[in-house]
Amino acid sequence: MPDTAAGITPLSLPPSILATAAPAIPTARGWAAVYRGEAGPAIDLTQAVPGYPPHPNLLARLGEEAARTANAGYGPIEGEEPLRAALAADLSRRYRDPLDAADVVITAGCNLAFVMTMMAIAGPGSAVLLPAPWYFNHHMALTMLGITTIPLPCRPEDGFVPDPERAAALMDGRVRALVLVTPNNPTGAVYPAETIAAFAALGRRRGIVLVLDETYRDFLPGNDPPHALFGDPAWRDGLVHLYSFSKSYCVPGHRVGAVVAGPAIRTQLLKVLDTLQICAPRASQAALAWAVPALIAWREGNRDVMAARAAAFQRALAAVPGWRIDALGGYFAYLRLPEGAPDALTMAERLGAEHGLMTLPGPFFGPGQERHLRVAFANADEATIAQVPARLG
Ligand SMILES: Cc1ncc(COP(=O)(O)O)c(C=O)c1O
Image (cartoon, rainbow, N blue to C red; front, side, top):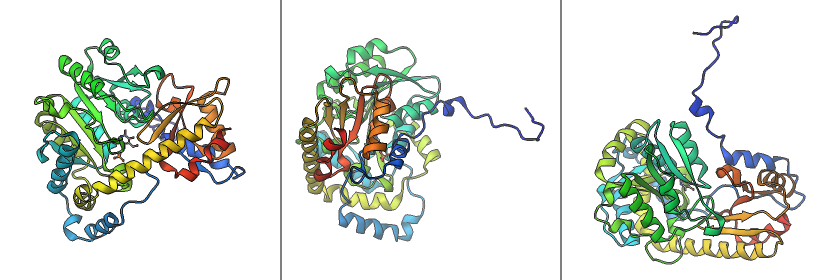
């Protein structure tokens, strides 16, 4: 054991955590700390949070449920039965294929759902294929778990939709999972059902799990099912679906997410859930079990609000010479910087510090993103979005 003259042994921290990126959002907000308000109030388009409050009845229920003694105790590892059943019914309605409460486990948020899923299906020394640009917390989770990320580059000319054939060519014997996020974070790209089906088929051929994070599915336009994977009688053998209640119900602080998977994966996942969370917050689960069926119309109304914000953002950007929207959907637009502009890191820092416009630079989302910025337009109402051109110009 090393020792120093002062009798203090220096800490030796694991390479996997040292290699993990620092939290992205505080970094970008830090750039705007020096902004003095010259261009008007700061506009924060960094974090994917809905820019409107939760439904008042949900807030009331959260309060009532938190006041119940029963909800102060530990709950079932796999989650509260009423919420599992409510989500299964909601999924069956949305995807038009029957799902069962038994298929669902409830987690303390979708980020934790991802980490726990990776612990159950991958593990140190394995590899996972991640379309790039990626959701930074996915990459951070894999790095800290000692899992190699194999980037699957997505091209602007394809609308940032990943290509299953390119994925097949990148797979080696270490790969345990393919991860897709649709609608995508950071690009907003919505993957066609046929592309998702092709990835599922690839996973099945290679004995690899397809992990589908559909956190933003309630913001897809129209009522067509996002994909038909739950209609495959064998889906439970190779698909893991992840969901977050944070965005759809505006409750990111209450930390509730879900994993939908078959019994073989769930059996392993329960070990991880028991160890990492014991149970998800119980009062939030009880309140959400009410909200899932009760707030369908409210959710659909919010989907329209988001569509209006996306349209307002497109109109706003059309007025700024040189800037281009390369992809858009869900909560996000992925912007191409004008020719000759500085790189994305410099640009995001300057926009924050000098113009009070907080965005995230492409390099936070993986390699090859130096010419892009992510804008979470969901955070801002249409009047605020209308101020964006002046800040970019
Ligand atoms: C794709 C994706 N998955 C998961 C999350 C996190 O969700 P939760 O708040 O449920 O942990 C986010 C939040 O930005 C996200 O964009």
